[in-house]
View 1 (spheres, rainbow, N blue to C red):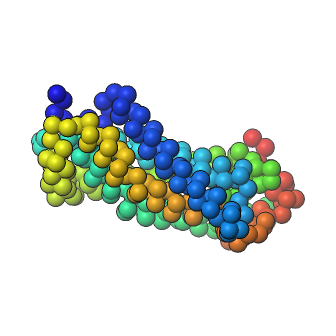
View 2: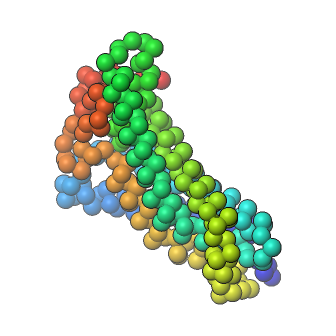
View 3: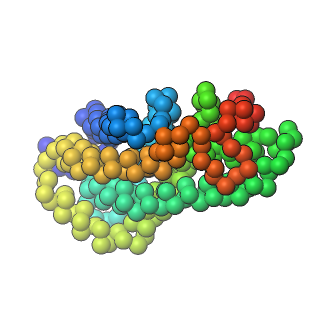
Length: 260
């Protein structure tokens, strides 16, 4: 019998991770339908799918980052704590402080983009057009145009995924360099509970049971930040983000939409 719980240990581990993602995304779908039925949300299905796919990409990035950090910590210490136990510790850290740091970085990017857009909004030359397009997409998060432009989705997805990676790196370094000794006892305690049963620890606790609520809450909170604010108000126009370009008007949207 395998004594140590390994994160990458065959098909059961793979399918448990896929199941976790499906359940978490289902929470967003339920939230969307619930708000639509009560007329509390104006997002179209197309916009909602783009928002969800943006979260799905960031979720995969966060999950892979968590796996790598947990495996590195487990094999860089002299203790016998398993990869699964460290992943649980890293995951709890990421879905609390990590999410807060991610949203803070996201807000900083939007504020910086809005300031830069103020300086470029009066320019209408070819040399500045791509900068205006990129900054506008960053400022108006959740706005993709009508019809939606995938280029805007791609810019926003890359930006948010980058924030996720940076936040996970900060959390990983904090655990490895500052809190490793203290958190090692928590991880070792978890190993002791499931001693001799690595499959149960991996499939039903580390990957599904415990992260389920945290993951669903994480995606719902992030969705509130990533969706267009006009969707909450039930209006078709976008809220100004401090920049000089407005996306709520179809003519403006066509004028400044990148042709990728």
